[in-house]
Image 1 (cartoon, one colour):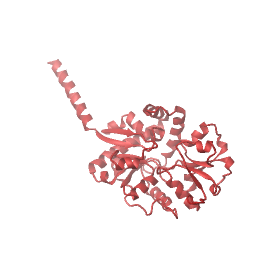
Image 2 (cartoon, rainbow, N blue to C red):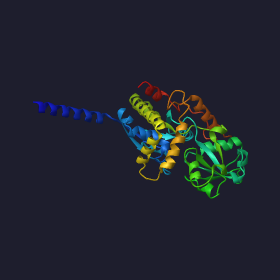
Image 3 (cartoon, helix red, strand yellow):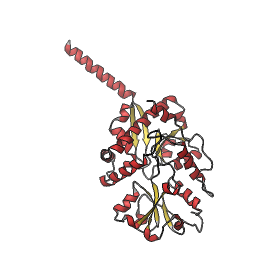
Length: 334
């Protein structure tokens, strides 16, 4: 009788576990770039069981040079994507109804890093020089900045020659460009690791120049937000992701180990990822209502920057419905 009772209890426990596992809601997250500490919060949330505790089965898809997150979600390959707001708003205006549901990075990490020997001491010295710029959606903040400065970037005799920059720092190291695009948490440190001394460089942070736009945020589609059940599921996802980010910022060494373990390519180094995690943590700071809150004033500032290009604005009009606090507010109630 006792054996039967134990067997029954075990069977009931297994059945309960299976029911719980089967009930987990699936969410696919498409990252903007490869596995690295830029996305530590999501990997930490998965590894520490935060998603599982929220009743979620989350698949994290790494990005890469040939992967455009907006195209992935438009094709149904993801429920949520990490993207920069300029890219998301430009895509929305072209017909893909993306909506920001959480803003993870509160400040911009983007900057132009220049060789001091190129005699560039201020933005007015950009004229007549070659500047490296990322494309695939990352060029929008740069083009808006150049337009604000009154510099042409195209035509037979542009004020600034734009070098379509690959995802490395070679153009600066090989002196093919006076300045290149870098992030505070990534490419700048690649230059330093290559042997260039900080005193040999001049940096211009978009945040300091008044042309910063919002970067890593979480986006979904209007169709998904029209379903109350999906909103509730995404609220659990945002809450668990925020928990992952907060844990990563407080436990950076552990977060780096988690990221390295998730890097299937094996290309990342502990040294670089440690520096990246330190810098990324700084971009999380400043939220008025907690990790993931999008301040409407920051949205308006981003839109203003993108509309400021006199000749070729990134977007032609202020977008309506491009962000929603519905998911964030629902997450706060969980």
